[in-house]
Amino acid sequence: MSRTAIAAIVLLLISIGACKRNDSAKDTAPASSSLAPVASASAASSADLHAGAHDPSNPPIDCPLRKAGIDPNGMKPFDQVEKYIAFLERADRIEWQKPDAVVRALDLDGSETVADLGAGSGYFSFRFANALPEGQVIAIDIEPEMIRHIHHKAMTEGVNNLAVQIARPEDPSVPNNADWVFICDVMHHIKDRPAWLARMHQEMKPDAKVALIEFKEGNLPEGPPESLKISKKTMLELMSAAGFKFVEEKKELLPYQHMLIFQWG
Image 1 (cartoon, rainbow, N blue to C red):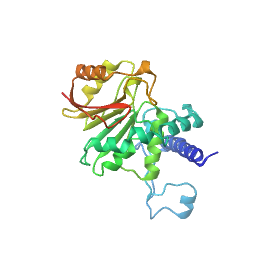
Image 2: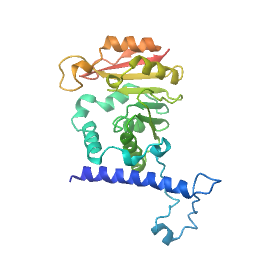
Image 3: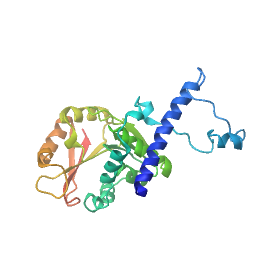
């Protein structure tokens, strides 16, 4: 088994353990509090720490899946999740997806809040977090496995300005404080696009912006089947009908994709 596979399995096991520990804490907490009492650093003995007590010098583990009422035991198998993450993070993708150039193209000042819709493995989320030292990224996805992966990667790497949020297929779940909504290779998966975009418009604050990336039509070496692609004309019509104003297209930036910028209108 590869080191990557072992690392992925360890992270997933940590996540499940964290979620189960959270439930256990809830079951044993006093009725007057939702949290089990935690001893101070000075009071915690070495024996307590070795026995598994929480060390107050470390941040608490807070499972976003339990908060959303999701049982980690019913999630997809480790190997299936690992393969999907490896596909999203494959080395050759950087050559045509140009993620760093895409982030720079938004001309962020570093203090914004960016909602990454359909964040997947966090391919863009972690890059946004690095570009926003005074801002925040909210990684949003309908797949609990991806939310768990991003959450624990952020914890283990000490990325403190990246939060996660689970969404439903019919609801983008955009936080109302987001300055930017970033949507890359997601729209062709949405079933009811007019309703989904209208909901997104309702959730966004006035003057917020949207960066929309989708694959171009034609015979390309990357991208979904031709039957799933959305033409630029259709994307412009859908966004306009939902209440968004077209600002510009980042032409020549991506070889296989359109990158369109819109503003809430």
